[in-house]
Image (cartoon, rainbow, N blue to C red; front, side, top):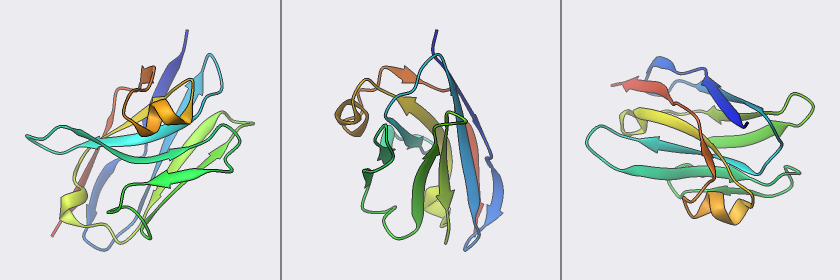
Length: 120
């Protein structure tokens, strides 16, 4: 059984940083992060291949967010810097049988989400 557990969310001022973690159990997969702002749909933020050699970002995350992974710990991270109020939302970890599935918002597994709030 695959389980994804996110941590690291919280309240931060604009311009600040946060690091999200997603601990996976039950397998090692290409993984990614999505977010859902209040009243909006879930959107892709970043994805990383199984090896960590390939990473993908939505335009708004490029240059500010970094996705990485530690396969020994079976954990994926999202380092977020220069945070903006529009980054506020619930951040979900996702895992898929291919990075394409993750990138196209069709992952096979979802975490429960962690709240990120950026105050202005």
